[in-house]
Image 1: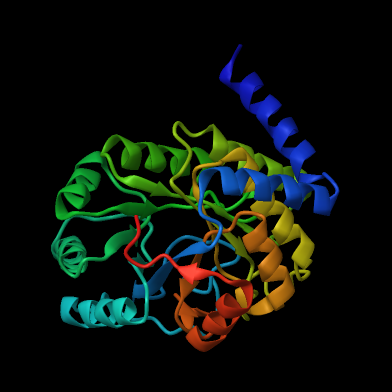
Image 2: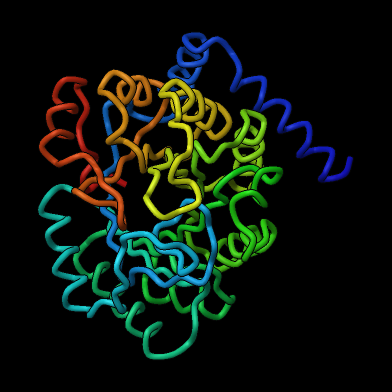
Length: 320
């Protein structure tokens, strides 16, 4: 059986799961979640934009693309000391993973990459898990990141293959998969997910989830994002995503990838507490904390603490 036929079958399976009656789907996902994870523990990460704006990619959702006229101001790569100060603050506020994002198309060897390696070493010295998202990278660069102590590399697929060309034209879908293979070959954990609300169909969402689950092994960390429409981007007037579609995606991700950490990521400010609660019930067991995700808003630490208290959840600080 060819890989194409196998993936096509996986898409049909993912679509069947995704389209189940919502409460039945959440019930099944909750059962799977409890078989593999402590449902009361939520892993907390903090994300910092270490180099902002001016990215040559044309991703239609992104406020940092040089192709769009968003209100996001460009900023050069941060200094190591400033990044580590932010990492210390994140740890003090309960995060156990610190994620650093640079608006690059790809990693380039040179002083800036050396600075990022120093950041990774510094974050690890603080006792935090480290994650970076830097675009495409070569095998030798992935090896250097691993040697510096990098735990996770984030590189999202964004959406299903059939819809991808409607969102991005400057980087192919297979290039994204190639980067994931480079990360995996270097022995770095993979963080990979996508964005809902890009005008995609449920089938395209099923394609995304099936592609993630088909990775061998599946990503250790799977961020599920809802589009935060930003002024000046092609998707600024995108139809808002119904909360139930996010719950469906989280639940399906949990069923298809039982041992992965599923992160309820961007777009949480648009979700009411009950919808977030259903996502946690359906298998989400990680969030981003802090007031901002790269360039978009995030719930305040106080509101997250209040929600955790209501739901009987606790941050899995220091637990691996």
